[in-house]
Length: 364
Image 1 (tube, rainbow, N blue to C red):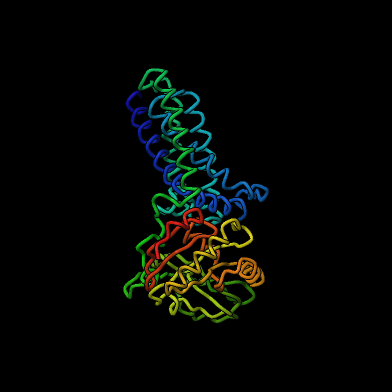
Image 2: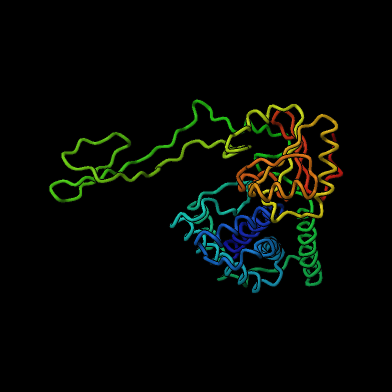
């Protein structure tokens, strides 16, 4: 039992630290995932929507800290109980999400590792089994260091997590796992190779035959049935290839101009996924930055999912000197974790990307 507990202790501790650090690197992204859980009928807790970022930060810090506590053997009873309660909740959440197909990506490892709902549930079941071993054998979890050193390590880990969270919140994630990272070419990211796997669908055709329903399942072809066609139910049984960048458009008056605009040699994108939630304290500096870029030959555009009235109002109020185009809100949230933010591109390749706190770091 001792060795089983040791192995479980290492696996659980390392996984919790890795999973937590990946999300701690991007707490804003994890908060977007929590919004999906709160708003799509999984937890049905819309009153928590305004607090998703705070909850995100607390959850990921707790996740990292509990992993560290387990590895160093700090307060074993408290640590194991906390891990058990957390994994029981996560296991229920991932099962519910997978069974009812509510959230297609749990966000367990942020954008670094994508897991399907059922893969997430399987991962949580395995972790639950390992934590139950720890629960039964918690007497074998001995501290690695003296009580004083363990307390110091515990305190340092909490402070370090808090400082790191504060840094990435006021700038951008230290490591960008998304397809819009610096150096990425947006048009290339949208390409679907000719030999890419195609989605496979199953069709359940329903007919009325002699007053009774008859269902015939095919892979697409219309079945020959001596009866009256009623309807057909389509199910995707195998996903096709999805390019890293999809649902990306730069629209104006309903026309997608992305292919044309991304050909620009010198392009500046001012991104604000929701202007109603933007930090207005930086819009004057944003206007000055846009003017400098324009003077140096850059085409400057805004990208937002907000209404036309709101976009025009912001342009006039802050004398921005550029127009906003429409882009899907989820896409904009994926591109950059700042509202507003600025990207500098060259023929579709992202050269620079900054948080509104770092506008002075832009180089034109």
